[in-house]
Image (tube, rainbow over all chains, first blue to last red; front, side, top):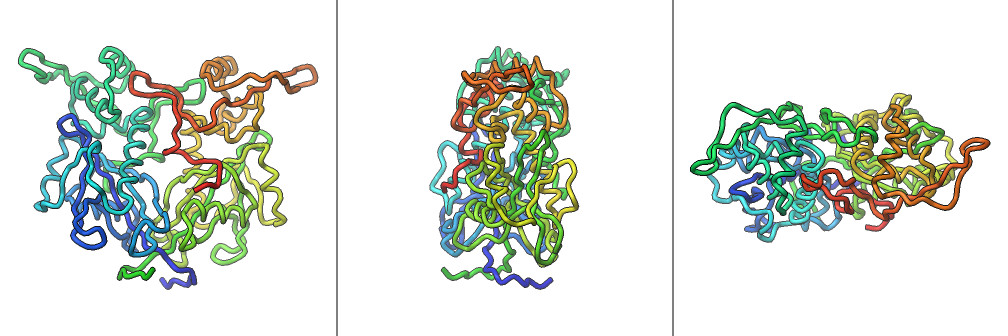
Length: 244
Length: 244
């Protein structure tokens, strides 16, 4: 298919911010750049969009190639296109964010590269390009969605205790929440299924396990009078599968 | 600045969905294409990104050139990049949405082109490219944000009645809301300032005028226990000015 435009064309890349909650900290998966520019610096994984692949396919391919991560929740974040953001020339990047649940994390560890590492989002090394801004934007989006949707459950294992659920909220929001209010609120939402199983949270403290009841991401039913309803948000949200 | 990539490069455009509420209907501003492909078809305004301008600058420039619209609320929507979306060759478009308040609308009428027209979002003509999908996505985003943020006030004049406020919600959500519940809810939010002035809503019905108290977009304070707070969302939202 010939290009007939007379306009100069920018390069287009995809870059992905990968979050996971590890040992009560919110971590981001970074790779160390092996080539110029910013050779040796840490960066979020990404690369050029192929001419015959969709943007999400490109993001998932780069993630797989560079970090071995696949099958995780992904969502388009924002497109960054400041004219001087890449010293090689005009490059526009479509940024994604991905969430890896605790029970999916072995996929990221499976890469044999020592140039892939988890860092605390609260203590990042200097990053290549404008990647620090992209990570910051992703954290803002994650916090916003945590308040209004069920996206946070993508970070939990399939079965979790209320302590684990609250710890996930606290590390993302970077502050403590009141235990009693938190439990009352989440249990009233009708999105948690209590399981028969328990998990030990101390030598003598078996804690009930729960699972998330919804198959899809949902928005919380906040504004019945303003129009709000709990419901699937497929059109607005990312997804876990690789399907197009 | 020389490009040294060996990768083929796609074209990059910006396209903007412009909403306004006119005569109790949610309208979208369309332009009739004067060139191939899709010559003669209606489309949302947009065009190619210049090599030295930011994406938002490009979107605002195209809007000004094609529809005379400027100084309105704009927010980046989503980037569409399906490989076959443009018959001329691989073209990735960064879509924006803009909201025009009732008292800003003369700016759009000032263009002397008869190829610019408002259409009901609920009764659109066939659109060029994948623009129908882009409009649908913009409507989904607008509905979502209407529930969770103050974005809807960008569609109202500076002074409005509660009847006008409710009508704006109803036309965007495409359903009727209970008047008493609606008023109770919006008045309890602490975001409306009652003015001394009134406006006639019938021969004998003077209705109180209100204004929106916040300078910035805010998210509603929904989840105090889940971490939610009312506060500025500058990082996540669009803006009204042309500033970079």
